[in-house]
Each structure stands twice: as structure tokens, then as C-alpha cells.
Length: 156
Ligand SMILES: CC(C)(COP(=O)(O)OP(=O)(O)OC[C@H]1O[C@@H](n2cnc3c(N)ncnc32)[C@H](O)[C@@H]1OP(=O)(O)O)[C@@H](O)C(=O)NCCC(=O)NCCS
Image 1 (cartoon, protein in one colour):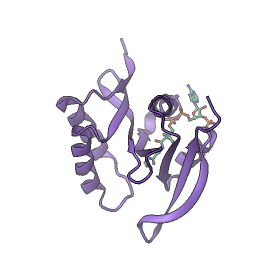
Image 2 (cartoon, protein in one colour):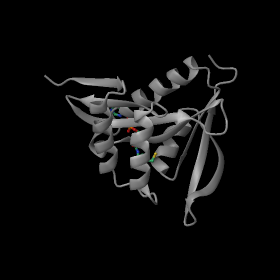
Image 3 (cartoon, helix red, strand yellow):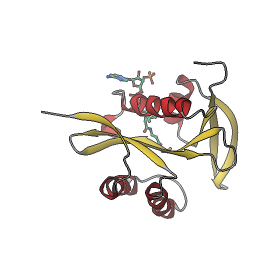
Image 4 (cartoon, protein in one colour):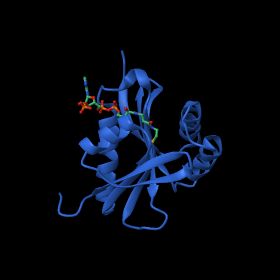
């Protein structure tokens, strides 16, 4: 029988290794992505970064990795969010995003922020209530990133 579930990282070495191998296998169009993946593993180990992921049997279908914003304490920042291609448009991205929004509200963050250059992601976030704040070349002079935020003020 197929078993699908949302998993909130418990921080065990085995789980972190599984996430590490999954994010390493992405072919993301970011400079120094491999160095970021190594740093990410260390920050998951120290519990600075957290991850929720969605599995079918034991395979990861999608992941969302987040941390407090480095400069602004009220902001929870999503650092990596993706659903593997064959599993898109089946609700997995929404389950992952909703679980992080719930976490952010519970932890009294006021906003969620994410930057991306992926149009599919921008469309998804706009439907979830995000607003575009600015566009900036954050990682490479040839690639403009869109910075989006969702503000919880005056919301339940
Ligand atoms: C953006 C992203 C996370 C969305 O994930 P997803 O799992 O496809 O999202 P969902 O399935 O929850 O929602 C997407 C759409 O599928 C629809 N959908 C959800 N469940 C569905 C189902 N069972 N059947 C049909 N459609 C469904 C949703 O209504 C939504 O439709 P809409 O866009 O018309 O509103 C995913 O497309 C992705 O990973 N993109 C690439 C991201 C990337 O580049 N990441 C790296 C930088 S951070």
C-alpha cells in the first residue's frame, strides 16, 4: 500500500542525510549551489535551519527548508522549496507551504519571505497571498531574483 506523509524534520542524522542527498540531486540554476548544500546540511544539524518534507513510501517528493531571517527577527525566510517534477500539481507544494505558514504563526513571526527567479514559484506564491517587494540580482549579476513577502498583520 502506498503511504504518503508530511514529515517535520526531527533532526536525526539519518533524516538529515536523506534531505542532503535529495537537495544535492537538484540541478538548480544558482551559482555555488553545491557549497550552499554543504552549508545547509551543517545548519540542519545545528537546528538553525529546519525542514519539512513530503514522502511517498520512503521517497521524498518535495521539501521546504527555512530559517529565521538573518537581520530581521520578525521574518521567517524560506531558503529552498521544491516539488520534484512528476509530483507537481497534486497539492504537495500547498501541504508543504501551509505547514510552514502554520509554524511561522505559532512561533509569532510576522512575515514569511522568499526569493526566487522561477516563474512557476512566483505564480504559486502570489496565489498564496505573497506580494512582490523588489527585484534584485542577489546571487549573480546576470540573474534577477524576485523577493516576495507575506505579512500576517491583521490576519488570523
Ligand atoms: C511552486 C511549486 C513548489 C508548487 O508545487 P505543487 O506541488 O505543484 O503545488 P500544488 O499542487 O499545491 O499547487 C499547484 C497547482 O496545482 C493544483 N492542484 C493541487 N492539487 C491538485 C490535484 N490533485 N489535481 C490537479 N491539480 C491540483 C493547485 O490548485 C494549483 O493550481 P493553480 O496553480 O491553478 O492554483 C512547484 O511547482 C515547484 O517546485 N516549482 C519549482 C520550484 C523551484 O524552482 N525551486 C527552486 C528555488 S526555491
